[in-house]
Length: 438
Image (cartoon, rainbow, N blue to C red; front, side):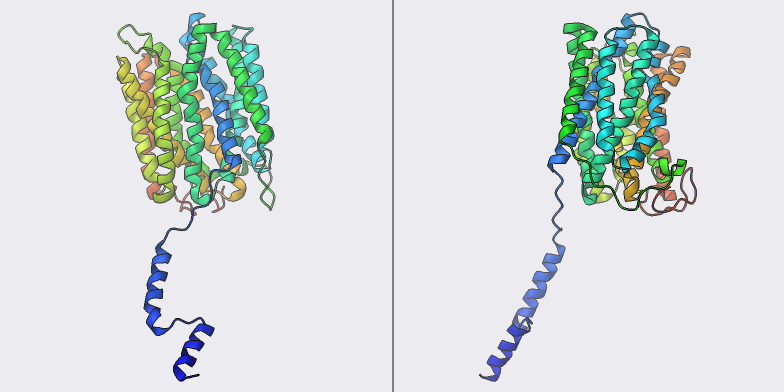
């Protein structure tokens, strides 16, 4: 063997590149290092069942969005009584959600979802047989138990099964399932009410709840995280690091709750020709369906705050336009803006709330964040007092102002470090909380 052949032989044995190939291999290595890593799989069977079940559950809720206020108005109830039944029940989930979040972290998500669906089916059936104000309020409180249990458990389930690097995208599709119901269910409910009366809407709601109950048979509970859970306390039930995203999102839920409760009375004003009010919610759902997937993927790439800011601006514009709407196209445009705002703000803020807590607090973070729905619904009842003393459109101007205040608070919180996943310098409402959560 010659000296040249021996050198080549040693290069192969030691896996070292020959001098004439070293530059090429270094170039290939540099190019390969710049290629994005393969993203983990998002669309699993369990993820699909979670979205489908969530869409079915929220369809039950949205069937009543326009039909219940209209039915109560036809029965002669006052504006304040309509607000009590439509939004007053939200006081129930305010107290239940933190416990639901803790039980979700303890591995009881599927059980709680089934309890919620049974509560919804039973309340829909019983509402057929009464038109008494306090009986309706009591049955809405039963639905409040369901609204505490299902969305919190389902949101915690999705946050658990999606890959962390695709969390924004996964939660965006989770929100998209509610937007799908928001788009179609109010129109479906209104159509059934026109054909079969309010009783037909209630029968449809009970049947849809039972369909969702069947879907839970195919869902599986994720494995619990090791380490157990600390004793029950305010700090463990409501993770402090999820409070700030919840407070910002409250402005969005307030606007939607106000629309659900008082859009029908607004449309009844003689100088307005707003057409079918249910179309507002359809266009709102379309706007959210457009914005949610884009907002989710964008937030995974550039951060949560750049997605939340446009959402709050769109919410402000949508609520202000509702207050000024005198024609149906103006109301439809307001619906699209409100939906875009809901899609961007909800997706970014929910992902932010989950980002900021430890693995064992995802259920608690989801529950804390979704408290915004309950507080917003209850606040819509309180804002009815404004409408009683001033006018219905003033209610929507107050909702628009809330979105503007939330935008200012978000920008201030970003400067203060309250939107970082790492430990901030100061926690809102709980200074000195640890990096793992409140």
